[in-house]
Amino acid sequence: MKIGCIFLILACVQPNVAQNLVPNPSFEQYFQCPGSFNPAGSNRNFAPGWNSPTKGTPDLFNRCSFGDAGVPHNWAGVSHAHKGYGYSGIYVWLNNNNYREYLQAKLTDSLTAGRTYGVEFFFRLSVYSKYSIDRIGVLLSDSMQLVPHDRIWAVKPSFTHILDSVYSKKTALWNRVYFEYKANGGEKYISIGNFSDNEEIKKFYLDFSQANEQKLNSAAYFYIDDVSVVPMGTPEPDTNDLAKHPDAKPNEVYVLKHIYFPFNSYELMPLSNQELSLLLSVMQKNPKWRIELSGHTDDKGDNLYNYNLSMNRARSVGRYLVQNGIAVNRIKTIGFGKRKPLVPSKSEEARAVNRRVEAKFLEK
Image 1: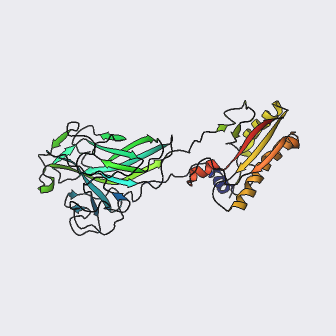
Image 2: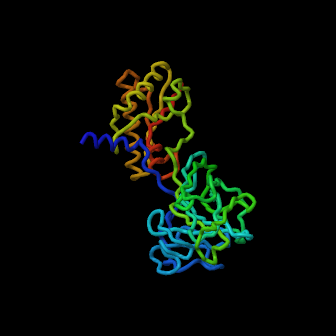
């Protein structure tokens, strides 16, 4: 039982599994079960959460279909999904033609400036394609794109995945694209496709292919599945950490990152002793200083409960100082509840950062 309690307590300071910000990431959801390829001029919103940023027409495939858009058998080839029962498909190259198709989705949350995100998806060359190419790209942008043509989208992608070889047994299977992206801040959309012009790419004619799909005789067509944009680590707001700045200065706010409480409790845990000792030493070295301790909670719970909890946590730290010889009149405690989050997000990682006690040293 004690082991379970310790795990629950540490959960407030350990990041949980991060949430994928891409809606319908495996193309399992559909407005209606697809029957065939999307015809020219069809609606840009071809699947829930996904649209075409250009006038190109991406396709949706699902096991529910008994027509040309089935899984594993469909008009473009034969392939099981990387996961689940569905995937999408796009033209990435067409011989003597600049035609392209792209996928675009609005993320469930905007990216935070300076934070790193893991971006991943899987692609596979359709077996009825007579050509293969060596690349595919990803664009992260702050606004929806609606390009008025179906040609190459002339924009610099955030990342281009380039294969070591144009065609091999590896390229004929599901291939993983992964990169880490440091956000500029405000990015809300992800787009996938071939952003390179015909002079840049390497192409290869698959003369051994026995396929005879007219629409793919002069084309490279990729299936796309399992798209994800996942925040990495804990957000790092611009704050002073007392443990990193033991030579504290007056009139500056320091976050006590290593002071811990059990869930819904204001009893100090033994894990807090090192940070508490550091706080005590600052007060002992500066006998004319006063300290203002402020407690903060995450956004869960009602205002009154969070206010009382934050106040009691600040008082617990103050009580430790008094018990170790610091005069009561040198200590002020305040509770802010959930009114002053460091990270304006409702993710569990952000909540762990927002649950804290802060210290401000004041000269008399």
